Image (cartoon, rainbow, N blue to C red):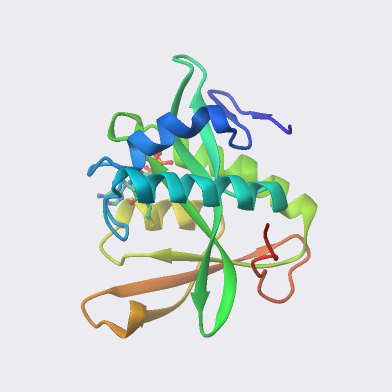
Length: 181
Ligand SMILES: CC(C)(COP(=O)(O)OP(=O)(O)OC[C@H]1O[C@@H](n2cnc3c(N)ncnc32)[C@H](O)[C@@H]1OP(=O)(O)O)[C@@H](O)C(=O)NCCC(=O)NCCS
């Protein structure tokens, strides 16, 4: 398993033993703000299954971020998937428990895992951000994403979404979701 250590954090691929922590986070309203909504236990488990599966195929897929001072999982960073303009693309996301926000953790963890992506592959990554989510947009700007365009998510004018992109490695076409399973 490839483990990354930054000044304050450990970032490593998810393992089955992380399931309870992630189900607790995915079923928590504060954790899931600016998302498709809070999960019930079944969909939280399904989401964690998806995380395990993608992490087997992509070394910079969503990974737990562990605060070394407390040994607690405080969030995640890394790619998931999103279909945009008919392409099933790798899409970067970050999310932290409320107590761990505002300390630079998202930037610290994401910078480290993006360096893995930069070494591993060449292409273009996507990031989707609610225009009202200033903190997330600030993280995106700090780690090298740039604004591409604004769309109505699922063609719903009530869901404006900013699309940002970042070159990975030497750059190239959009990075697509690999065949899983
Ligand atoms: C978005 C999120 C991951 C950021 O994590 P974090 O560890 O607090 O981020 P960082 O501390 O690395 O950076 C946040 C930056 O946003 C800035 N910021 C925070 N709140 C802000 C606000 N309301 N308006 C403008 N900037 C804001 C901070 O000052 C910081 O920038 P700076 O370094 O220039 O001072 C975290 O707030 C979170 O988990 N939010 C809920 C889930 C979520 O929205 N995920 C993203 C979905 S796209």
